[in-house]
Amino acid sequence: MMRLIRPDDTANPPRSESTAPEMSATTPGGRELPPLPPSAATRRRLRAQRRRDTAPELGLRRELHRRGRRFYVDRAPLPGLRRRADLLFPRSKVAVYVDGCFWHCCPIHATQPKHNAAWWAAKLATNVARDRDTDARLAAAGWVIVRVWEHQEPCAAADLVEQVLAAPPRALGT
Ligand SMILES: [Zn+2]
Image (cartoon, rainbow, N blue to C red; front, side, top):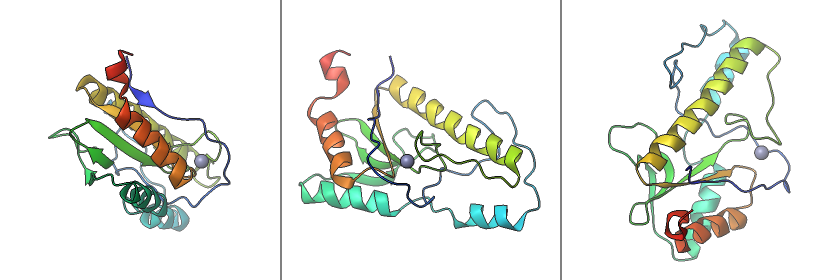
């Protein structure tokens, strides 16, 4: 059973497309993306993505610190698997990912770029597939995965993380 916690939070407006997953040219299944089209706009967008220390991440970290929580930042839960979690609580085996609305296709704010539409569709689908693959691998290794969207308020995201730390799903036998 998947131990993935993702709340439905629809309260907030779109944010910047700032949180990007790790770049890779292949899907978890090894399917190759089509070659990147020679578009300056596409290249600019890819270059502008930031992989860590985004505003939503910092907000969540700050709020959890304020509540006395301590954790690792930007660390891989599993040795050898390059899927670093944004926040890691090793003792509780809880991995937290703050997913960017654009890069991870948030149901509220996902958009499909019009230029190079096919390439972007493949790229974003690859990101989502990698997320699910990460979830499955971590769950299989006994980790609890908490995914929050970048559009969520830090307090709400921190509440969710603390809820899981207090009573991980595995402890409840779910
Ligand atoms: Zn969103």
